Amino acid sequence: MKKICLSFFAVLLLISCAKNAKSTPDGDLNKKFDAYKDQFVSSLWKLNPEWASNVGFHKYDSILIIPDAKENQRKLEFANSQLDSLKSYTIDDLSNNNKTDYYMIKNQLEGMIFGINELKIFQWSPAEYNVCGSFAEILNGNYDSLETRLRAFNKKMNGIPAYYEAAKKNIKNPTLEHTELAIAQNLGGSSVFQDDLKNALEKSKLSDAEKKEILDKAAVSVKAITDYAEWLKKLPNKTPRSFRLGKDLYAKKFDLNIQSGYTADEIYKIAIDHKKDLHEKMFVLADKLWAKYKGNAVKPADKLELIKQVIDEISLKHTTPEKFQSEIEKQIPELTAYVKAKDLLYIDPSKPLVVRKEPAYMAGVAGASISAPGPYDKNANTYYNVGSMSGWTKENAESYLREYNDYILQILNIHEAIPGHYTQLVYSNQSPSIIKSIFGNGAMIEGWAVYAEKMMLESGYKNSDEMWLMYYKWNLRTTCNTILDISVHTKNMSQEDAIKLLTKEAFQQQAEADGKWKRVTLSQVQLCSYFTGYTEIYNLREELKKKEGDKFNLKKFHEKFLSFGSAPVKYIKELMLAEE
Image 1 (cartoon, one colour):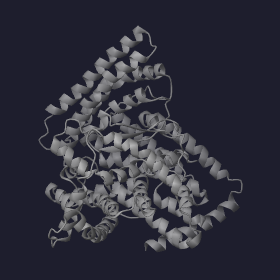
Image 2 (image 1 turned 180 degrees about the horizontal axis):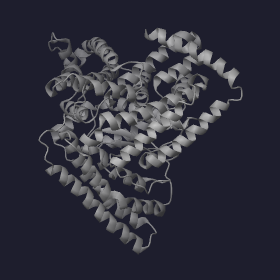
Image 3 (image 1 turned 90 degrees about the horizontal axis):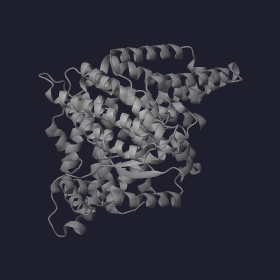
Image 4 (image 1 turned 30 degrees about the horizontal axis):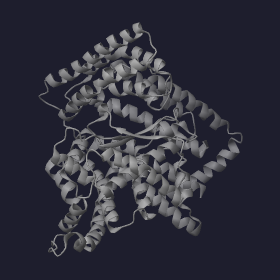
């Protein structure tokens, strides 16, 4: 059925292109839609100044939106009004580029309505309320003079007390997990208004009077933040909401967030089959490596146990907590040189990548991440955020480092940096469509990073049985992310069964499994983005290879695929196949 639908869509694209050429020879409708997009984006930034700042549009940096009931109503009115505006455009008469933008705008608006009317995360997740990150970005930015940024920081602080008062009114029966996260992140992030701010003020040319005013407001801000954390600690919550989303809400959120050609149920079944396939491949390699790492020890009858024992031996080769970040920094130029040597795709040397310690306001969900500048701030730094092991027990640090051993650390860097997230997001910012950049599809973004891992190994990167075994282990993590997320949120998977899946079937270290359990209790659907996007991208490449035969060029495929910005893979596929 899926193949029939896709074939029909391809025919429809050809028909609509011909129709468009006849009915709008001057592209009047597309010009009109382009003008609408400009107006839409301008209105969107007024409604979401923090989001605007994150993508490099700093006109509204001094504004802090108060998240009260009036604000939700304002967003609903905006979404419904814009959906009405979209109805004035006949989708078949738009260009391929604008068709995709149309669908992405529509999906974004429907997601806003779903979030307010059905998901209601603003009621049950106190972690939704945290000003620290947006203020930190003002301090860390280089888009304007330090003095201009500090004045925006100063004005924005005016709303912090009202912001947290609104948060308190919104919260009803929060989950225990999101409450704990909110307390930790807000208290940790409050340092932005203390040490970070003082350091910035010392470097600035502001007058003493301005500095005093800012510090006085900062003290009020810190009090509002800490008061919110204390309020959460004392909040009576006899009937906390479960962190589990439930089948119906999950299915809707999956469709809106992932925008895949697959449903949640379909990708779950594909992941189950892929897990089985990975186990078979891993057994072949582990059996081959047994004598090298286990000598004459008797092989266990259980295949998974044999794989685990070989992985455990290989995982002993790792860096130290002190050198973890520097080891990552060292590998980035090596990856860049390899991609250039193999001519896999162009990497722009003018776009800086900075490895840094993960900021406190980001801690608690993922151990490594990328913070990329938006399309309005293309030349700003991209940050590779590395989690710290400071304060960890020796046992936990050792467990973490075995997980990120010398082989997997390289795969992590491929995923996060080159040619993964960092590279893809640089391309995304060059997309001619602002819509495709600002509404970046998580499954495409994560899927590309996962695809990059396999592509690099297929090209010969650090080729060895150990590297492939560890790659399969890493890919098994991606696969089990999907199985875990869907099982926990829609099938009531217990913590015990989740840990068993991760440690026994995905061969993860205990620290990694514990961290993943925490993550699945704090997020929903996002963990599916990796495997879903990867599956769709890899399948698209193989389909084009089959179609083009000897004419297929890997670099051309990569650069063409990335040229569409961070659009959902299903739309990129339609555009690339239509060009074929």
